[in-house]
Length: 232
Image (cartoon, rainbow, N blue to C red; front, side, top):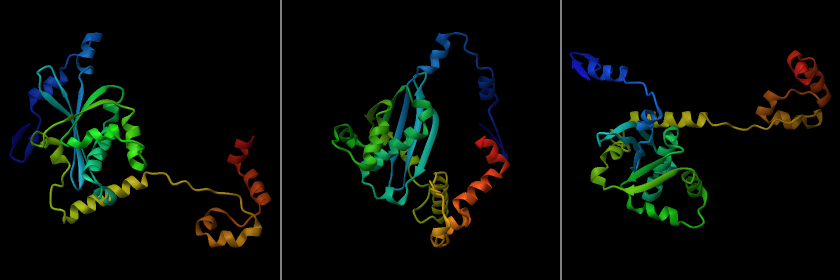
């Protein structure tokens, strides 16, 4: 990246290298980068989780593919350290699913208590669901000392203090957006004139169901041009 006065522009040499990257012409050239194992570094703090997805290239160095971080909800912040670390792995695996599903990858964590996961008997609740998710992936977990795990550790922490109203607003908005994306199942049943009082006592039903009998509803449906075509 080249920096000038109030100007940011890409390094021409980097841009040229990407633009002129040779197109693979045989299976060997395609496999030269497809068979490189992914490394997933994960970490959890008291406020959120962070992850870094990388690969080791021909130069023997790790090259970052993508970064990820996610704040914990209020219930998740009350989890014990081990459960938060496991949740960090689950969050990262879900986020990078399209990269790592169907191939072997290595998960690195600075928490030494992860070995109890595979030996846990009769899991229940969220723990059972997490283990079920992990069971669909081909992975190994390795311990890495915290001093060497700064990449994921930094992403798991807030950039400012816990009393920052800006961060709280952003986190609450993100959680609200996630809830709004979930589907809420509503059951609508046919109502008759006999239970009119029940319909009126339910504001949702009052808006969705008019005060008509079953036969009247069927007649109204048959008069609808679109529904008439569907029934035919």
